[in-house]
Length: 197
Ligand code: MN3
Image (tube, rainbow, N blue to C red):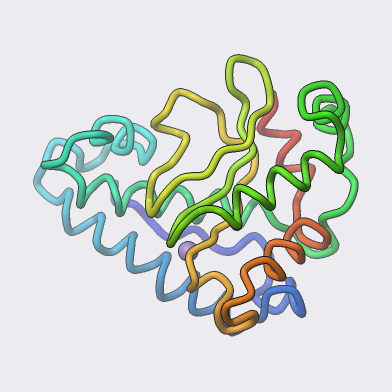
């Protein structure tokens, strides 16, 4: 079994004007695909070949000798999770059980937005901001480069990619405007709810 590049869950034009078709095309077909290609080359003829992606990530996390494999595997997983974290016509107020959980664990939607945007904006350099479930409670965390909460014993619910390649064509240096657009117009709350169960 080789690791394959998943299709985007929507057409590449579907998130415009918040994320352009050009950004999605390069991000998916070039960046995400490169991590898939690199990973398959690195695990060829090792005992990681044929393993599910999640177990490749947990088995190589924290091992400096396996950092090439970890970085590519985690980036494959993080990007697949990021595509699903968005939908056309998404964003705005949460629905379903995550809505009540945000009220009880994060002091409400306004506080969620503030904390999530703060994590995304204060991640120095490349990385990710996440909504996660940690010991049954919601938390907001950021990770550097390829690091993923998946290998840190918490359950990822939502992510935004804050590597420059995710927004530079559309927003140049204005990461805050990109994160604003993500929160207001793109978050797929159905996906977040499905990750809660
Ligand atoms: Mn990316």
